Image 1 (cartoon, rainbow, N blue to C red):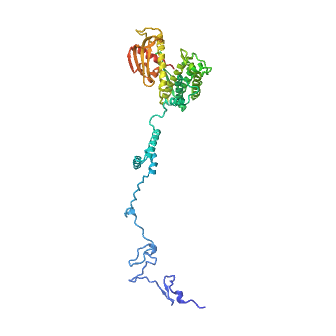
Image 2: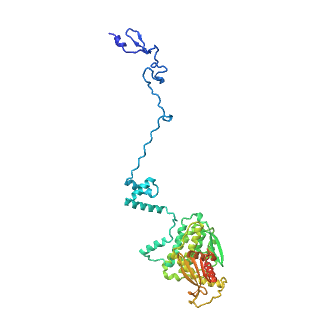
Image 3: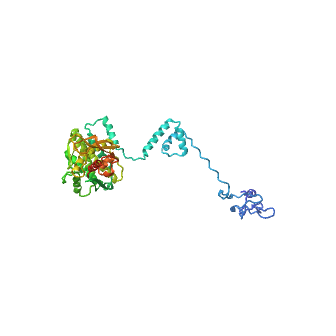
Length: 458
């Protein structure tokens, strides 16, 4: 076999020591000496070798394989480039239309609000939509009370009745009781235990002296249940007192009997029987028709015809609803004007009989110019002027309950606000502080004001 050619075996091959093998077997070193005969250590792995990242040789050697670190901007280099300016939005019609809701809620930026308002001046469709949205926002953010208008129920019912009259209508003289019990029931429906046991002080006048009785909200409803029972019994309905005896069939005695019979103070459970009884009363008087309005209702010391008794119960329901609302710090509006007018009219018609009863009891001194007249004849009179909601004028005969009020025989004139007069008749306002205007016979004015306060009872 022929051996390898020596020239091919050793040509251009470096041995392990870094020299070059020659054909004659001699060793040729890779001499990297400089001009001064010193050896260049750059490529030999010395201090300036690739592993140390040294600087290139001054004579123009190869650059290092690992680059030097760059200078940090934070160390004083060139500033960061400024961010590009934000692009201004293009307010197209769809975008402006989508902003109408936010604009109505005042939730747009200043630029968006300006663009929307400029657009509304030229786009009728968006202007109409913006107006509707603003009105809707106004309903959601009403600053006034959210309580319903006390006349709303009456107006809704009136509209319904005009379209479809009921088969059995509620008599006009029972409409006030129907409305006031419904309003009080709406006030009670969200009461918790704390509200039902809130203290309430009932107030009325007895023999010209202010009298009070402490109870609770539940106790007031029990009182209304007991006194409304006078009308229920007269109409043949169940007596809420049941077998509980009452010393006399007066409102106060019936209430005290009901309270005594309760093993514990009345609670929210009293609302259900009171509510059911009020509904039964309205249904029953509606079925009896207008002819039953003269049925006498005994109050113990006096009788009232059914149509007046229902007004009396409506009046007391409103007064005690205000007592309850004050106890729980809740606003409560007066009755509808037409109902308030009927209540005032009932009190004005009762004043002559109360005046005569007070004279018999020695609570009213005989007037120096008093003179009796035949029944139905005109006599000395006081003009009672009621201002405001439900107002009007009434001539009150002073000397005899059977006399007729006469403008020719007017000796005094008293002016009061309608709600203020009702509160006087409920015993909530002292007679000395009630009248807004007084002209004429001071004795007659005093007698009438104290007689109005004497209409109150527990």
